[in-house]
Image (tube, rainbow, N blue to C red; front, side, top):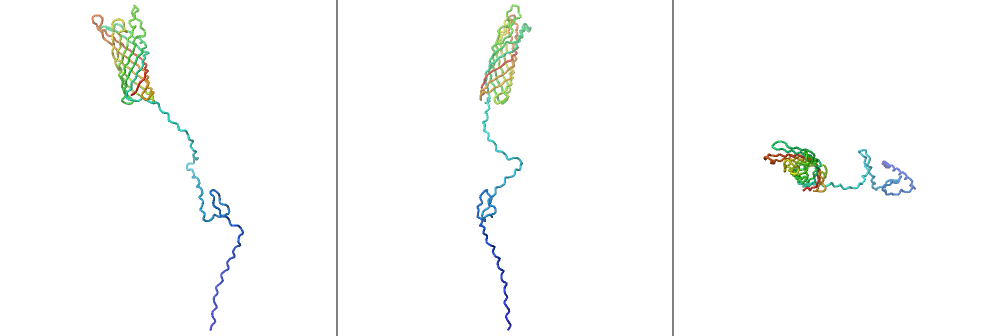
Amino acid sequence: MPAPEPAVQMPAPPAPAPAPPASTAPSPPVYFYPPGAPYPPGYGYPLGYPLYPSPAPPAASTTGLAQAQPVEARPVTEPVPEEPRALGWLRLDASFVVFPLGTLSYKFSRAGEAQAFLSGDASATPGLSISAEFQPVRYIFFGLSFQYLATVKWSDTSSPVDSGSSLYGSSGYQTDFLPTVGLTLPVGSWICLLVSAAPGYSRINASGMVKGYTDPGTVTGFVLQAGLGLLLSFSSHGYAALRATQQWGYQSSETAGPANGDVVTTELHSSYFGLHIGVGYWF
């Protein structure tokens, strides 16, 4: 009987490598990551500890300009209120008037023939003016004025006759009715410029102006006044008025002569430069 085959022997497993000698160095301690401080060198980051977020770098400037500086706080100032402007549709005012410069021209005719003529400077004349003006739109106004001149006479009363008596030594008075049209132009919060023209009707009591020939009585006729002035508001309705005017008058009368019933014609032409100072109220 044949001999049994020998059993196959498995190679022995290799011997495990010898373990490294145990280190005598102490184990590193576990540190918690403090915010803002580096982790100690030489130590690994502890397992399971969340990563601490690093601060984001500042965004780069795209404009290349320096970072804006903080704005300095400034005190807040209240706006200065504007002066009140007088407003409304209707204004009434009264003015003191003086006409420092003027001329008077007198002509006396009988039956169409000139008998006497005198032209010269007029005396300064004080007066009073009252006006009402209606303004339907912003720039245009219409009005009516009454004007009274207390003294109308020549400044030189020398007489052309040998007797030395003055034929022109006394004075008369004048009243004017002046429809007015003009422009109001605002030039500031409280100033308005006025430009006006007033063609009207005038009466002069000339009975005392001429002593001789015949009594001229009351001469009447056309008068034209041109004006330039300012309205200065001192409240929401009140204002002061300053105006300069130039006016021309063409007055005449016809009366019966002392003899034969001849028609006597008296012509009186006047020219005055005036100054008006007054106050008013704007409704």
